[in-house]
Image (tube, rainbow, N blue to C red):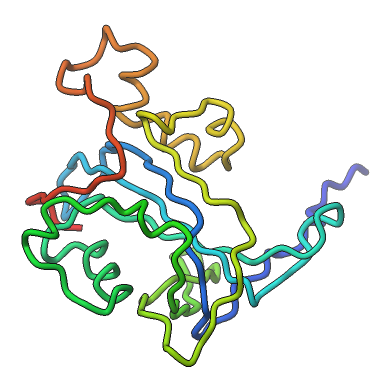
Length: 210
């Protein structure tokens, strides 16, 4: 008899509730084809990550205590109803004017603190996961500890780094490699000329809903 077993420990979820957090990573996933309301559409996606410096755990004995982290993916759009714009307005505690929303460099938020509201949910397979339900300004009475993780930015222009890409988790790496921008960088002669300019993390208005 040869028994194969799964002895991996279940991943600990970020605790539900309100947490002081600090933004430390922004990864431009690129233009991906996704299904929205039964139709396939191209959307520029970005993955933003926060550390929770008050929720320390030992994930690797050689590194000691490290903060738990949580991420959220957005369509890179400042369209009035886009989730990115809604969350940014909650974060800054103020609505954007239409002039401000024309172009907003979201990398300005790297290192900035906020208050994350996290809830536990279950996917279609019944597996529990933690997700960000809202982002707001950190209350004046609350202090966010100093940042632990180094700021990280990845895009297809000045912040493109193949070594950093290969070090990312597989599911993120596969998304980036399926993007129009990555394909244009690797085999530019086979791509549409409209992709000559690699995208950065500056969202613009779009008529596509989030």
